[in-house]
Length: 273
Image (cartoon, rainbow, N blue to C red):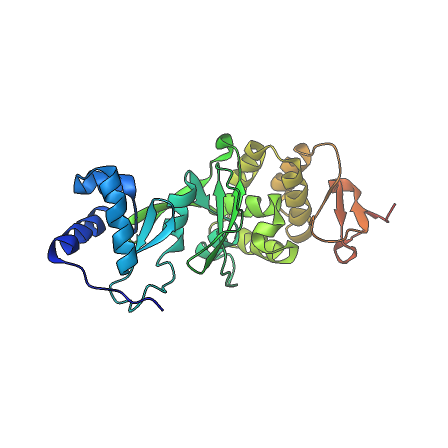
């Protein structure tokens, strides 16, 4: 266990200035501008502070501050959302992480889901003990987000309807079919329900699988939502997809062009063929 060492008065004043003028993380470029120092000298200074235990490096040129109450450098990220925003911006927090924030689930997920326009090599990085699950989208699909404050930092998170649709697009982002279905049902019975936005966002996502899964679940659990169901039918595309790509699917629901597990099969179902 590496302990935090003392630093001099001038160094402490500089560090305090960085804490005041940044939002949980600091880059070499930021620090150089704030401290009015050359970039090479700033880089050495940040590396020295990290060696002393006052900063912790999360990637090349980016650091987080060690909480003052910490006794060692072996500390977890104080707010992983803020770090994710700096590492993967432009991005937003999505999937089950957003679902937790909007109270669509009571499950606790330790991994942070990040949706970004970047294409990182490592899609499952672990940074200071915190795991991230990273998914990439095109820039024109960056919509349906809300800005939320995390301490002094503003971070983007998918709004409730976008959260639901992202998980329908990729059920892995919600922990699988069953949790996603439960979160969809919670959304549809909550004050955050907005079927107009579900329809609008689903169209903008240009993903036929989303309409198929959304329509199937809507018809199964909320048959009275005829406007939503009709919009999903209008958005159907050619081809057949799985309700959950991760699960075996023995039956096809012909009306929604979905292969589904036998436990999800209903009257409008054809056997395995």
